[in-house]
Length: 167
Image 1 (cartoon, rainbow, N blue to C red):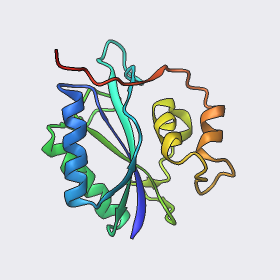
Image 2 (tube, rainbow, N blue to C red):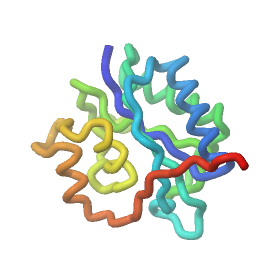
Image 3 (cartoon, one colour):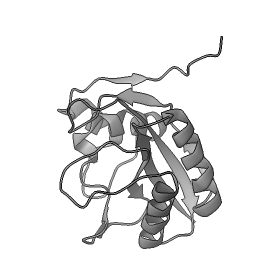
């Protein structure tokens, strides 16, 4: 079994329901969730005038290879209504699953680079990642996730999300 860290998020529709559904699908098709961060709300990174995202990082125990994991993530995104745009740039979406790191695995393939090459640049990834694995050191760096967060030059506000309560 390999421990895989996956960033999940979305900014369209009932965001919290999409996160819950993504986690249920992950447990059915990828493996058991070992730990998960709190949910955080963040302005849409790389987009203007887009709804805010809910983001979370989870650790999953899986027997899948990196490419099998990638295909499983794409399948979950499609099930949750994500429509990938072939044009360059970022777009709003119901679900986004990014493989951040798989323990013991480094990959530099066209389809999948591990660890994810943009982890250190994105506060919305580092804040929840640091919550569940602050001391994790990624291949290719001598710094922990907490160190990367301390040095991150992305100053986008990342706020712990409070679930709406029913009245």
